[in-house]
Length: 272
Image (cartoon, rainbow, N blue to C red; front, side, top):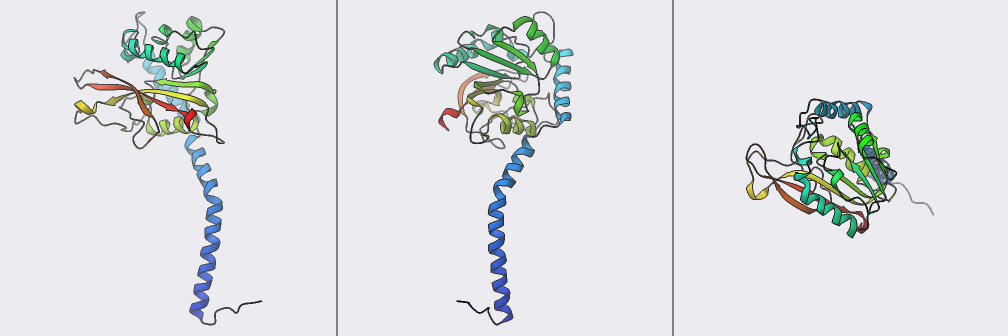
């Protein structure tokens, strides 16, 4: 059975528009997943100049002792990375390793291991430390490497540079990266690929504005022009909006007498 086409020019035009709209909708529904995947790949793609910028910025910080010096007089990872400044955090981490039965750890932005050397790593069967500064990694390899503890000079942004593990940890790192680089880190390491996550858990520590003693100039998630700067970061707020909850918080005093907080957030991928 056949149906006659509408006789009037207006009816023909309306019919043609409806058909075009239908075809366009079908094509759009087909292309949307591919467009979204392409967007994620573009966001997560790492350019060589970005790795060079990271390496140059943080190598300069260590060589110039911009963040201070360790007990040996060499440039180090900063005042928040000393043994004394991390007493409570180390206890928290050790409890987490035991209670969650963590057997493998990837440390993104491991730094010079100034505080990490005092962690009781005995429950962990494999530790992988990654940092972009070659001289720092070379020193770590000389002083701290073992059969189940390795260090690698790589950018933490590239997906293949961080292996899968039970736990991904990153302390005081993302606060020094521009927003686009934080997005790359999230897309490559904290997002599902082919329906699977690389890690069971992620512990991410950054400075944050203290909402109970908020300074008018203290604003979370400002952007940085270049890597190596600093700003307060709240990963649960836009533009990141991660499904992370506060796991541990402690006060952190600064030179401007404005009390901020260090906050460790937990992402539990076993519940996703």
